[in-house]
Amino acid sequence: MGRLLAHRDARTYLAGQLLSVLGDSALWLAMGIWVKERTGSNSAAGLVFFAFIGGTCLAPLTGWLVDRVRRRPLLITVNLATGALVGLLLLAGPRLWLVYPVMFGYGVSNSLLGSAQTALLPALLPADLLGAANAALQLAATGLRVVTPLLGAGLLAWAGPRPVILLDAATFGLAAGSVAALRLRERRPGRTGERPLAAITAGLRHIAVTPPLRRLVAAVVIGATVFGFFETVQFAVVGAGLHRSPAFLGVLTAAQGGGALAGGLAAAPLMARTSERALAGGGLLACALACLAELTGQLAVVLAGGALLGVCIVWINVGAVTLLQRRTPGRLLGRVDAAANVLVTVPQAGSIAVGAAVIAVLDYRILLAVMAAVMLAAAGYLARVPASPADTATGDPIAASNRVQR
Image (cartoon, rainbow, N blue to C red; front, top):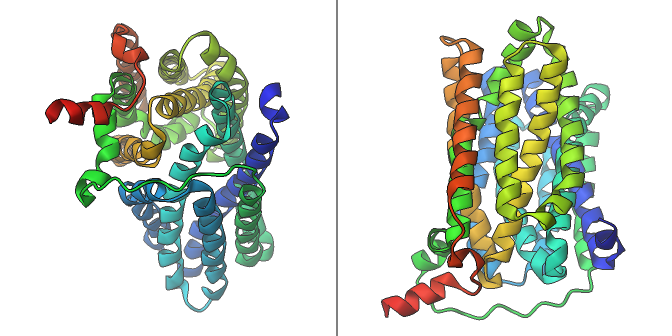
Protein backbone atom coordinates (compact mmCIF):
# COMPACT_ATOMS: atom_id res chain seq x y z
CA MET A 1 0.00 0.00 0.00
CA GLY A 2 2.93 2.33 0.66
CA ARG A 3 4.14 2.10 -2.95
CA LEU A 4 0.63 2.82 -4.17
CA LEU A 5 0.28 5.97 -2.07
CA ALA A 6 3.73 7.12 -3.20
CA HIS A 7 2.41 7.21 -6.78
CA ARG A 8 1.17 10.76 -7.40
CA ASP A 9 -1.61 9.88 -9.87
CA ALA A 10 -2.78 7.01 -7.67
CA ARG A 11 -3.17 9.31 -4.67
CA THR A 12 -5.07 11.88 -6.71
CA TYR A 13 -7.37 9.32 -8.32
CA LEU A 14 -8.13 7.42 -5.09
CA ALA A 15 -8.95 10.66 -3.25
CA GLY A 16 -11.47 11.61 -5.93
CA GLN A 17 -13.13 8.17 -5.89
CA LEU A 18 -13.31 8.24 -2.09
CA LEU A 19 -15.32 11.47 -2.25
CA SER A 20 -17.56 10.09 -4.98
CA VAL A 21 -18.43 6.98 -2.92
CA LEU A 22 -19.18 9.25 0.04
CA GLY A 23 -21.82 11.15 -1.92
CA ASP A 24 -23.27 8.08 -3.67
CA SER A 25 -23.89 6.14 -0.49
CA ALA A 26 -25.47 9.11 1.28
CA LEU A 27 -27.95 9.76 -1.56
CA TRP A 28 -29.56 6.46 -2.47
CA LEU A 29 -31.04 5.63 0.94
CA ALA A 30 -32.00 9.24 1.66
CA MET A 31 -34.06 9.45 -1.55
CA GLY A 32 -35.98 6.28 -0.69
CA ILE A 33 -36.72 7.60 2.81
CA TRP A 34 -37.75 10.98 1.42
CA VAL A 35 -40.24 9.43 -1.02
CA LYS A 36 -41.63 7.25 1.78
CA GLU A 37 -42.11 10.30 4.01
CA ARG A 38 -43.79 12.31 1.26
CA THR A 39 -46.12 9.56 -0.01
CA GLY A 40 -46.49 7.13 2.90
CA SER A 41 -46.13 4.35 0.32
CA ASN A 42 -43.63 1.49 0.62
CA SER A 43 -44.13 0.75 -3.07
CA ALA A 44 -43.29 4.31 -4.08
CA ALA A 45 -40.13 4.18 -1.96
CA GLY A 46 -39.16 0.80 -3.40
CA LEU A 47 -39.50 2.16 -6.92
CA VAL A 48 -36.63 4.54 -6.18
CA PHE A 49 -34.26 1.57 -5.93
CA PHE A 50 -35.94 -0.14 -8.87
CA ALA A 51 -35.30 2.93 -11.04
CA PHE A 52 -31.64 2.91 -10.04
CA ILE A 53 -31.27 -0.81 -10.79
CA GLY A 54 -33.05 -0.31 -14.11
CA GLY A 55 -30.38 2.20 -15.11
CA THR A 56 -27.58 -0.22 -14.29
CA CYS A 57 -29.14 -2.77 -16.67
CA LEU A 58 -27.80 -0.70 -19.57
CA ALA A 59 -24.30 -1.91 -18.66
CA PRO A 60 -23.64 -3.63 -22.03
CA LEU A 61 -24.22 -0.33 -23.84
CA THR A 62 -22.25 1.75 -21.34
CA GLY A 63 -19.37 -0.73 -21.52
CA TRP A 64 -19.35 -0.38 -25.31
CA LEU A 65 -19.20 3.41 -24.97
CA VAL A 66 -16.28 3.16 -22.53
CA ASP A 67 -14.27 1.26 -25.16
CA ARG A 68 -15.10 3.71 -27.95
CA VAL A 69 -13.59 6.82 -26.35
CA ARG A 70 -10.71 7.90 -24.14
CA ARG A 71 -11.55 7.00 -20.54
CA ARG A 72 -10.12 10.08 -18.79
CA PRO A 73 -12.22 12.70 -20.65
CA LEU A 74 -15.22 10.37 -20.36
CA LEU A 75 -14.88 10.18 -16.58
CA ILE A 76 -14.60 13.97 -16.32
CA THR A 77 -17.65 14.53 -18.51
CA VAL A 78 -19.84 11.89 -16.87
CA ASN A 79 -18.95 13.03 -13.34
CA LEU A 80 -19.87 16.63 -14.18
CA ALA A 81 -23.06 15.57 -15.99
CA THR A 82 -24.10 13.35 -13.07
CA GLY A 83 -23.52 16.20 -10.62
CA ALA A 84 -25.86 18.34 -12.73
CA LEU A 85 -28.38 15.49 -12.94
CA VAL A 86 -28.41 15.09 -9.15
CA GLY A 87 -28.93 18.85 -8.87
CA LEU A 88 -32.30 18.43 -10.61
CA LEU A 89 -33.53 16.76 -7.42
CA LEU A 90 -33.62 20.24 -5.88
CA LEU A 91 -36.69 20.80 -8.09
CA ALA A 92 -38.42 17.61 -6.95
CA GLY A 93 -40.26 19.15 -3.99
CA PRO A 94 -43.53 19.81 -5.85
CA ARG A 95 -42.56 17.37 -8.61
CA LEU A 96 -41.78 14.16 -6.72
CA TRP A 97 -42.03 12.11 -9.92
CA LEU A 98 -38.71 13.70 -10.93
CA VAL A 99 -36.92 11.43 -8.45
CA TYR A 100 -37.50 8.37 -10.66
CA PRO A 101 -35.94 9.53 -13.96
CA VAL A 102 -33.05 11.08 -12.00
CA MET A 103 -32.39 7.80 -10.17
CA PHE A 104 -32.62 5.90 -13.47
CA GLY A 105 -29.98 8.23 -14.93
CA TYR A 106 -28.00 7.81 -11.73
CA GLY A 107 -27.97 4.05 -12.32
CA VAL A 108 -26.78 4.53 -15.91
CA SER A 109 -24.03 6.83 -14.64
CA ASN A 110 -23.03 4.35 -11.93
CA SER A 111 -22.59 1.62 -14.53
CA LEU A 112 -20.69 3.90 -16.91
CA LEU A 113 -18.35 5.27 -14.25
CA GLY A 114 -17.67 1.79 -12.83
CA SER A 115 -16.57 0.34 -16.18
CA ALA A 116 -14.55 3.44 -17.07
CA GLN A 117 -12.74 3.37 -13.72
CA THR A 118 -11.89 -0.32 -14.13
CA ALA A 119 -10.61 0.35 -17.66
CA LEU A 120 -8.57 3.42 -16.68
CA LEU A 121 -6.54 1.86 -13.86
CA PRO A 122 -4.29 -0.40 -16.01
CA ALA A 123 -3.33 2.64 -18.11
CA LEU A 124 -2.71 4.72 -15.00
CA LEU A 125 -0.68 2.32 -12.84
CA PRO A 126 2.06 -0.30 -13.22
CA ALA A 127 0.68 -3.85 -13.38
CA ASP A 128 2.12 -4.76 -9.97
CA LEU A 129 0.08 -1.99 -8.28
CA LEU A 130 -3.30 -3.00 -9.71
CA GLY A 131 -4.10 -5.34 -6.83
CA ALA A 132 -3.28 -2.72 -4.22
CA ALA A 133 -5.33 -0.08 -6.06
CA ASN A 134 -8.36 -2.37 -6.35
CA ALA A 135 -8.04 -3.31 -2.68
CA ALA A 136 -7.90 0.38 -1.70
CA LEU A 137 -11.01 1.16 -3.78
CA GLN A 138 -12.93 -1.77 -2.30
CA LEU A 139 -11.78 -0.86 1.18
CA ALA A 140 -13.02 2.70 0.74
CA ALA A 141 -16.30 1.65 -0.88
CA THR A 142 -17.18 -1.00 1.70
CA GLY A 143 -16.04 1.02 4.68
CA LEU A 144 -17.86 4.19 3.66
CA ARG A 145 -21.05 2.35 2.76
CA VAL A 146 -21.27 1.21 6.38
CA VAL A 147 -21.39 4.83 7.59
CA THR A 148 -22.63 7.10 4.82
CA PRO A 149 -26.20 5.74 4.41
CA LEU A 150 -26.70 6.70 8.05
CA LEU A 151 -25.12 10.08 7.29
CA GLY A 152 -27.57 10.62 4.44
CA ALA A 153 -30.56 9.54 6.55
CA GLY A 154 -29.38 11.74 9.43
CA LEU A 155 -28.95 14.81 7.21
CA LEU A 156 -32.39 14.19 5.72
CA ALA A 157 -34.01 13.99 9.15
CA TRP A 158 -32.14 17.06 10.43
CA ALA A 159 -32.27 19.48 7.50
CA GLY A 160 -34.30 17.88 4.72
CA PRO A 161 -33.16 16.59 1.31
CA ARG A 162 -31.38 19.75 0.11
CA PRO A 163 -28.02 19.23 1.93
CA VAL A 164 -27.92 15.55 0.87
CA ILE A 165 -28.47 16.51 -2.77
CA LEU A 166 -25.89 19.30 -2.66
CA LEU A 167 -23.35 17.02 -0.95
CA ASP A 168 -23.68 14.37 -3.64
CA ALA A 169 -23.55 16.87 -6.50
CA ALA A 170 -20.42 18.44 -5.01
CA THR A 171 -18.63 15.10 -4.70
CA PHE A 172 -19.12 14.45 -8.42
CA GLY A 173 -17.49 17.79 -9.16
CA LEU A 174 -14.54 16.92 -6.91
CA ALA A 175 -14.22 13.48 -8.53
CA ALA A 176 -14.13 15.13 -11.97
CA GLY A 177 -11.42 17.49 -10.71
CA SER A 178 -9.29 14.61 -9.43
CA VAL A 179 -9.44 12.88 -12.82
CA ALA A 180 -8.64 16.15 -14.62
CA ALA A 181 -5.54 16.51 -12.41
CA LEU A 182 -4.08 13.18 -13.59
CA ARG A 183 -0.95 13.34 -15.74
CA LEU A 184 -2.16 10.45 -17.87
CA ARG A 185 -2.37 11.02 -21.62
CA GLU A 186 -4.39 8.47 -23.57
CA ARG A 187 -4.46 7.58 -27.23
CA ARG A 188 -7.78 7.76 -29.01
CA PRO A 189 -9.15 4.21 -29.53
CA GLY A 190 -9.06 3.03 -33.12
CA ARG A 191 -12.10 1.93 -35.08
CA THR A 192 -12.53 -1.84 -35.24
CA GLY A 193 -15.13 -2.12 -38.00
CA GLU A 194 -17.21 -4.53 -35.88
CA ARG A 195 -20.94 -4.78 -36.36
CA PRO A 196 -22.92 -3.16 -33.50
CA LEU A 197 -24.15 -6.42 -31.97
CA ALA A 198 -20.69 -8.02 -32.18
CA ALA A 199 -19.14 -4.93 -30.61
CA ILE A 200 -21.62 -4.83 -27.72
CA THR A 201 -21.26 -8.56 -26.94
CA ALA A 202 -17.46 -8.64 -27.28
CA GLY A 203 -17.02 -8.49 -23.50
CA LEU A 204 -19.16 -11.57 -22.95
CA ARG A 205 -17.32 -13.45 -25.72
CA HIS A 206 -13.96 -12.51 -24.22
CA ILE A 207 -14.98 -14.00 -20.87
CA ALA A 208 -16.24 -17.14 -22.62
CA VAL A 209 -12.99 -17.79 -24.53
CA THR A 210 -10.58 -16.84 -21.70
CA PRO A 211 -10.41 -19.86 -19.36
CA PRO A 212 -9.10 -18.05 -16.22
CA LEU A 213 -11.83 -15.41 -16.47
CA ARG A 214 -14.53 -17.91 -17.40
CA ARG A 215 -13.76 -20.09 -14.36
CA LEU A 216 -13.62 -17.23 -11.90
CA VAL A 217 -16.77 -15.52 -13.20
CA ALA A 218 -18.61 -18.88 -13.18
CA ALA A 219 -17.65 -19.44 -9.53
CA VAL A 220 -18.79 -15.96 -8.53
CA VAL A 221 -22.07 -16.39 -10.43
CA ILE A 222 -22.69 -19.65 -8.55
CA GLY A 223 -22.22 -17.80 -5.27
CA ALA A 224 -24.39 -14.89 -6.44
CA THR A 225 -27.39 -17.20 -6.90
CA VAL A 226 -27.79 -17.26 -3.10
CA PHE A 227 -25.84 -14.23 -1.89
CA GLY A 228 -28.94 -12.02 -2.04
CA PHE A 229 -30.52 -14.12 0.73
CA PHE A 230 -28.46 -12.05 3.14
CA GLU A 231 -30.69 -9.03 2.48
CA THR A 232 -33.57 -10.80 4.27
CA VAL A 233 -31.82 -13.38 6.45
CA GLN A 234 -29.87 -10.78 8.43
CA PHE A 235 -33.12 -9.50 9.98
CA ALA A 236 -34.03 -13.04 11.10
CA VAL A 237 -30.53 -13.58 12.49
CA VAL A 238 -30.95 -10.49 14.68
CA GLY A 239 -34.55 -11.16 15.73
CA ALA A 240 -34.99 -14.94 15.88
CA GLY A 241 -31.34 -15.90 16.39
CA LEU A 242 -30.01 -13.24 18.77
CA HIS A 243 -33.40 -12.08 20.16
CA ARG A 244 -32.48 -8.43 19.64
CA SER A 245 -34.36 -5.47 18.18
CA PRO A 246 -33.93 -4.61 14.47
CA ALA A 247 -31.69 -1.68 15.47
CA PHE A 248 -29.04 -4.25 16.47
CA LEU A 249 -28.48 -4.79 12.76
CA GLY A 250 -26.27 -1.70 12.95
CA VAL A 251 -23.87 -3.65 15.17
CA LEU A 252 -23.65 -6.45 12.60
CA THR A 253 -23.07 -3.87 9.90
CA ALA A 254 -20.23 -2.38 11.94
CA ALA A 255 -18.70 -5.86 12.29
CA GLN A 256 -18.94 -6.26 8.51
CA GLY A 257 -17.16 -2.92 8.07
CA GLY A 258 -14.38 -4.06 10.40
CA GLY A 259 -13.99 -7.26 8.41
CA ALA A 260 -13.88 -5.29 5.17
CA LEU A 261 -11.12 -3.12 6.62
CA ALA A 262 -9.04 -6.15 7.60
CA GLY A 263 -9.75 -7.89 4.29
CA GLY A 264 -8.83 -4.83 2.27
CA LEU A 265 -5.49 -4.44 4.04
CA ALA A 266 -4.65 -8.11 3.55
CA ALA A 267 -5.94 -8.50 -0.04
CA ALA A 268 -2.99 -7.17 -2.04
CA PRO A 269 -0.24 -8.98 -0.03
CA LEU A 270 -2.19 -12.26 -0.17
CA MET A 271 -2.81 -11.93 -3.89
CA ALA A 272 0.88 -11.20 -4.49
CA ARG A 273 1.82 -14.43 -2.69
CA THR A 274 -0.89 -16.57 -4.31
CA SER A 275 -3.11 -15.46 -7.21
CA GLU A 276 -6.28 -13.60 -8.06
CA ARG A 277 -8.13 -16.91 -8.26
CA ALA A 278 -6.92 -17.97 -4.80
CA LEU A 279 -8.00 -14.66 -3.27
CA ALA A 280 -11.50 -14.88 -4.78
CA GLY A 281 -11.74 -18.53 -3.72
CA GLY A 282 -10.78 -17.52 -0.19
CA GLY A 283 -13.56 -14.94 -0.29
CA LEU A 284 -16.12 -17.59 -1.27
CA LEU A 285 -14.89 -19.82 1.55
CA ALA A 286 -15.11 -16.90 4.02
CA CYS A 287 -18.73 -16.38 2.94
CA ALA A 288 -19.55 -20.04 3.61
CA LEU A 289 -17.99 -19.78 7.07
CA ALA A 290 -19.94 -16.56 7.71
CA CYS A 291 -23.20 -18.40 6.96
CA LEU A 292 -22.30 -21.22 9.34
CA ALA A 293 -21.34 -18.73 12.06
CA GLU A 294 -24.70 -16.96 11.79
CA LEU A 295 -26.46 -20.29 12.25
CA THR A 296 -25.26 -20.59 15.85
CA GLY A 297 -27.26 -17.82 17.53
CA GLN A 298 -24.22 -17.07 19.71
CA LEU A 299 -23.46 -13.35 19.78
CA ALA A 300 -19.66 -13.54 19.55
CA VAL A 301 -19.79 -16.14 16.76
CA VAL A 302 -22.42 -14.19 14.81
CA LEU A 303 -20.32 -11.02 15.04
CA ALA A 304 -17.34 -12.99 13.77
CA GLY A 305 -19.54 -14.14 10.90
CA GLY A 306 -20.38 -10.53 10.10
CA ALA A 307 -16.67 -9.73 9.96
CA LEU A 308 -16.09 -12.70 7.64
CA LEU A 309 -18.83 -11.40 5.37
CA GLY A 310 -16.92 -8.11 5.05
CA VAL A 311 -13.74 -10.03 4.18
CA CYS A 312 -15.67 -12.09 1.63
CA ILE A 313 -17.02 -9.11 -0.30
CA VAL A 314 -13.64 -7.40 -0.56
CA TRP A 315 -11.62 -10.49 -1.50
CA ILE A 316 -14.04 -11.66 -4.20
CA ASN A 317 -14.27 -8.23 -5.78
CA VAL A 318 -10.54 -7.49 -5.64
CA GLY A 319 -9.57 -10.90 -7.03
CA ALA A 320 -12.14 -10.78 -9.83
CA VAL A 321 -11.48 -7.19 -10.94
CA THR A 322 -7.69 -7.58 -10.86
CA LEU A 323 -7.82 -10.78 -12.91
CA LEU A 324 -10.16 -9.08 -15.37
CA GLN A 325 -7.76 -6.17 -15.80
CA ARG A 326 -4.73 -8.42 -16.26
CA ARG A 327 -6.39 -10.82 -18.71
CA THR A 328 -8.18 -8.32 -20.93
CA PRO A 329 -6.78 -6.12 -23.73
CA GLY A 330 -7.26 -2.43 -23.02
CA ARG A 331 -9.61 -1.98 -25.96
CA LEU A 332 -12.10 -4.44 -24.37
CA LEU A 333 -11.89 -3.55 -20.69
CA GLY A 334 -15.09 -1.51 -20.51
CA ARG A 335 -17.21 -4.19 -22.18
CA VAL A 336 -15.69 -7.08 -20.22
CA ASP A 337 -16.25 -5.28 -16.91
CA ALA A 338 -19.85 -4.50 -17.89
CA ALA A 339 -20.50 -8.09 -19.00
CA ALA A 340 -19.09 -9.51 -15.75
CA ASN A 341 -21.25 -7.12 -13.72
CA VAL A 342 -24.40 -8.17 -15.55
CA LEU A 343 -23.60 -11.88 -15.19
CA VAL A 344 -23.22 -11.47 -11.42
CA THR A 345 -25.88 -8.84 -10.72
CA VAL A 346 -28.82 -10.60 -12.40
CA PRO A 347 -28.69 -13.82 -10.31
CA GLN A 348 -27.91 -11.81 -7.17
CA ALA A 349 -30.99 -9.63 -7.73
CA GLY A 350 -33.05 -12.76 -8.33
CA SER A 351 -31.80 -14.30 -5.09
CA ILE A 352 -32.93 -11.19 -3.16
CA ALA A 353 -36.48 -11.73 -4.44
CA VAL A 354 -36.38 -15.48 -3.76
CA GLY A 355 -35.00 -14.96 -0.25
CA ALA A 356 -37.73 -12.45 0.58
CA ALA A 357 -40.38 -14.92 -0.60
CA VAL A 358 -39.19 -18.20 0.91
CA ILE A 359 -38.22 -16.89 4.35
CA ALA A 360 -41.94 -16.62 5.04
CA VAL A 361 -42.25 -20.43 4.85
CA LEU A 362 -38.74 -21.66 5.70
CA ASP A 363 -36.66 -21.30 8.86
CA TYR A 364 -33.86 -18.78 8.25
CA ARG A 365 -31.32 -21.41 9.34
CA ILE A 366 -32.27 -23.54 6.34
CA LEU A 367 -31.48 -20.61 4.05
CA LEU A 368 -28.14 -20.08 5.78
CA ALA A 369 -27.31 -23.78 5.38
CA VAL A 370 -28.19 -23.63 1.67
CA MET A 371 -26.03 -20.54 1.28
CA ALA A 372 -23.09 -22.20 3.01
CA ALA A 373 -23.40 -25.29 0.80
CA VAL A 374 -23.56 -23.25 -2.43
CA MET A 375 -20.62 -21.05 -1.42
CA LEU A 376 -18.55 -24.12 -0.53
CA ALA A 377 -19.46 -25.63 -3.91
CA ALA A 378 -18.35 -22.44 -5.68
CA ALA A 379 -15.07 -22.32 -3.75
CA GLY A 380 -14.52 -26.02 -4.39
CA TYR A 381 -15.12 -25.60 -8.11
CA LEU A 382 -12.59 -22.79 -8.28
CA ALA A 383 -9.99 -24.75 -6.30
CA ARG A 384 -10.57 -28.02 -8.16
CA VAL A 385 -10.04 -26.71 -11.68
CA PRO A 386 -6.36 -27.36 -12.52
CA ALA A 387 -4.13 -24.67 -13.99
CA SER A 388 -3.68 -24.88 -17.73
CA PRO A 389 -1.44 -23.15 -20.28
CA ALA A 390 -4.34 -20.81 -20.99
CA ASP A 391 -4.14 -19.54 -17.40
CA THR A 392 -0.78 -17.99 -18.13
CA ALA A 393 -1.40 -17.01 -21.72
CA THR A 394 -1.45 -13.36 -22.68
CA GLY A 395 -2.82 -11.50 -25.64
CA ASP A 396 -6.26 -11.17 -27.11
CA PRO A 397 -8.25 -14.44 -27.04
CA ILE A 398 -11.04 -13.01 -29.20
CA ALA A 399 -8.60 -12.02 -31.90
CA ALA A 400 -7.04 -15.49 -31.69
CA SER A 401 -10.47 -17.08 -31.88
CA ASN A 402 -11.37 -14.99 -34.93
CA ARG A 403 -8.12 -15.97 -36.63
CA VAL A 404 -8.94 -19.66 -36.11
CA GLN A 405 -12.45 -19.17 -37.49
CA ARG A 406 -11.16 -17.45 -40.62
